[in-house]
Amino acid sequence: MFKTAMGLACTLALVAATANAAEDYPTRDIRMIVPWGAGGGTDGIVRKITDLAEESLSGTVYVENIEGGMSGNGLIQLINAKADGYTLGALTYDSIITVPWQDMLPGYSTEEMDLIARITSEPDAIIVPADSEYDSFEALIEAARAEPGSIRAGIQNMGARTHLTLLQLMDATDADFKIISYPGGAAPQKEALLNGEIDLALTSLGDFASLIEGGDARGLIEFTDVQSQSFPDVPPASEHDLDIQMGSFIILAAPAGTPEPILDELEAAYQQAYESDEFQDWLVDVGVTPNWLGRDDVTQWVGTTQAEIFATMEELQEQGILD
Image (cartoon, rainbow, N blue to C red; front, side):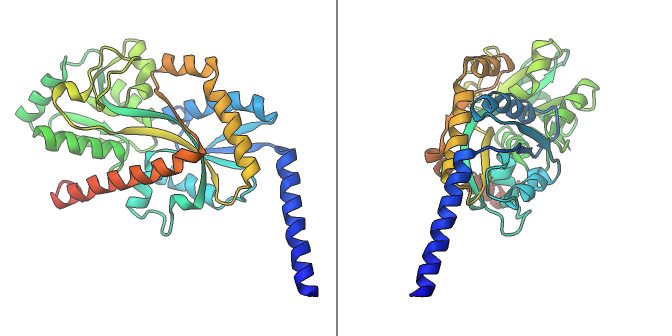
């Protein structure tokens, strides 16, 4: 009975301590890990919404860029952090699909994290320099068929989302591109497109919004079945009878086991920031699609998305298109 009483007392003390910590949260700076380089689309979006969320949290959230391993280096630090609400992370397609698919972190799964919310989802697109000789998607595909391997296509990582999108396009159109990878997000793709290293970049239009609006680049196609409101001149793939829908997204997460009251507070703060006129107007300006899913829905969505894309990858493997 003494041991039982002591155990109950310890449990109650732990619950009380957790409740007190959540009630006072935050009492120090919160670290937000972005597993990609500074200057890319993910980095900019996370920094913007985090700046706004600070107002609701009444505390400072600082963003730290941890590059490498197709987001794996940042994920390691996130899942190994103390589950106290003071380390958060931004998950992207690679964090959800590429890393577990390629078993880059043995034993890793999304179950090692508590998902807070999805804030955006963006289709992939083909972007060319403003003075490109390819004035349409049809012209690009025709040239890639006529001279296989002559057109240089810049993706972000071999085996990652943009690579998979390009492989699906090549399979569907019989076009053949020379694939060049630029690990580290969209920033090195931008530089490569501007200096002539590549003839096209494959990523979201939002990643290249500043170059498109500045007249240095233009989009040819977006891999979705919905016309973009931010880029009305870029047709969706469905207009070309292509059934390719692929793109990026941003999900906010914390290490598994983070106290529920803290997760609730984080979700509320980021949702308020997401719904603010400032953030919504900013997303339109940079060409990004807002797409909120809260804690109750985002975990289920991730499971469904993984199942669907893993099935696509297995099919491409069977066809010999993907190693």
